[in-house]
Image (tube, rainbow, N blue to C red; front, side, top):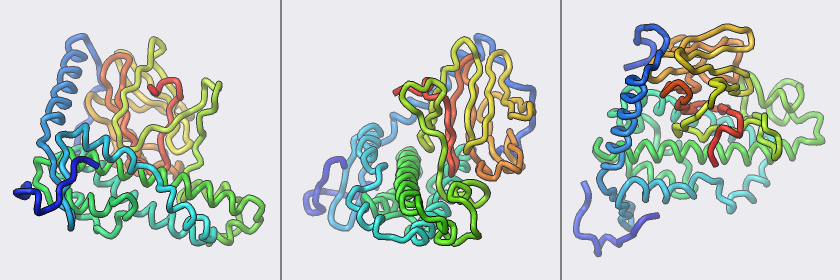
Length: 335
């Protein structure tokens, strides 16, 4: 995780909301608008790359990173569930697994709120993170110490804080996937699985869906299945090229929607209700303040679920903020 120096070796210590936006006409894209959007994206990337070198202080050492890419690379392995914890997880009862998953989900919602708020107010991500209790971060992979070190730093290190937040949320999703598999294995032949889960009698699949959904049972991509869906990496902005068809299906926590591009951008649900998209970032979810308000009956869809940002007549940027995931056709995600 970067270069490490002991303290005696180191010579010093390093120092608009969606609800309030007006609703203009749907986004239209001519050549100049597309060029300006690409230029803006390039400038945003350049600003990110100019982030200063990072030095994190721990009780017994300093860890240094020369730049953002080195920091992100170091955190990549920490987005996986640690194999050493598997034995402890298997030893838990179904009810204990559900209780742990519930606590994890609460923490995930709080962090998703931070990520959502930082979209409209990126300069305040450090302040938003300080609102989260430190003990809510797992000690797996040293995450608690990492987040504690980051929130102490000044706003000029906010780009690092955002990367760490995204990677930690990906860790939570990986942990949820492992917990889901263990839970389902333990309750496979148990007709009273829902009783162990602390609910009224119902089938195991129902436990994992709806308003009180604990586990994500979204469709997974199958080899050779061109229509299979694949989840977006949580918190990361992904560029999708819809091709000449300029339309695609996507799944919001198992709820099917369609996205259309061209001279105008809009989304549509299975009831053929259409939702125009604006130029810039569009927040999709169940909250009444979202730009695209999903039917309240879709209880597994998060209040702030997805950010959709039109880029050109055939490209769009997607950022998943949800608890239960957003899936797109596997063929549209680059390996």
